[in-house]
Length: 313
Ligand code: TMO
Image 1 (tube, rainbow, N blue to C red):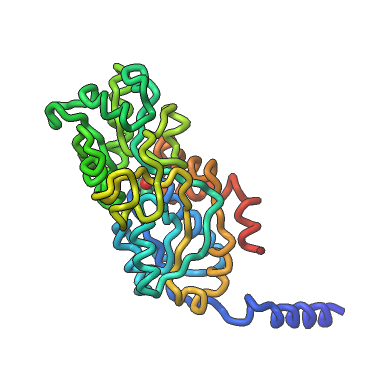
Image 2: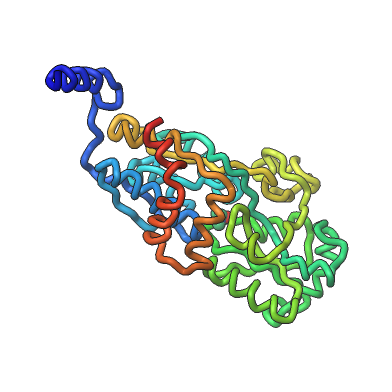
């Protein structure tokens, strides 16, 4: 009887398409960037792959150049393709070939100019960008003279803050922060005396639970705003729109991943994080100050029901 059962289950295994080809022992190369949710999510997925018996290697890479690395197979996948910051690089890589769109997360994203709510007391016309521009003097610093300062993210996230200021003829100067931590430090120090500030921020993120705030409303994003000057309110300029207010968050992979690691690819296809899950992953590092690999362990422990569904399909 026991023999029969074993033979039956061996037969079932042989029938299973997932068991037909074993995943390669070569490491799945997962890129790590410079914001916390991406780092924790990468560790979460890496630890899931390790639980499947696969090898994983993490590499720290530039968040724009990574699309070329995935296309070439030097990096196996990318877990957080944010439409606002990386849509253009992702589309360019798709056109060249070698990278595949592995679908959207459940999450809806936005990345743009943002202010903590106390800023509105000093500039009540917000969130309109025109009202912000009329208040530019409130945001002036020693560094920016009589122009308002906009503290943008690190240069590899978004390269077009300066172009937007020019395209919309704004009285602002764009200063790039050196790191995400510098953005949080700036919001924290402005909080003490409720100093008006405008900085780059995004959702989902831990920040929304710590500092209530709003995105500045720029002219609504229209496809082509970064390619065709005629799109957007300034007929002669690119980047005269805000970033998408309901942007996607995608997964991408090297096109060879499915053949080389079929089980891992099937799991990657099923992976889908929500806004609250992503905000929680960022919080574990930015507020609770865990190391990313520890944060991933905590997240996996607290969300077994979520990811066991991805493993078993
Ligand atoms: C890519 N980011 C979430 C930092 O805007």
